[in-house]
Length: 170
Image (cartoon, rainbow, N blue to C red; front, side):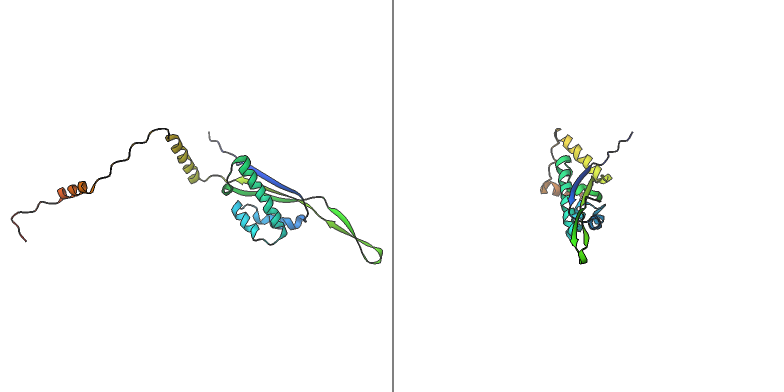
């Protein structure tokens, strides 16, 4: 029977952000599915105002993951980002001939969900080796082998050479 560990999810939300949801969704699409360092780089070089807000929400989610679950930032990737509409503030502006025009000041709720990246077989093997090494620290290790001296190695090579003939002079 094999057990598969479900990845842990971490979430952060920013509510009542004074920004149009449509404008924030354009930036949220850029970081969806990326690793956290890559998402930070994308947001750092995005010139829209929503990038700054999304960067703060992403940082909050990463902090939640590190503080609550002990997951390193490098192991996280962005599973979902979505922007929901919040309440709309309605204001009025005077227009020509005694009329009014409605001004809608929109708000939004931004949510970022991070997930721990699953381990590749190579990573899981290295973790198992590290765990095995930790367990072996309680058992004494054998002493390292002594190094051979230069004199000992010369003796060995001398015995392997063919014997010189006494009668032959060069």
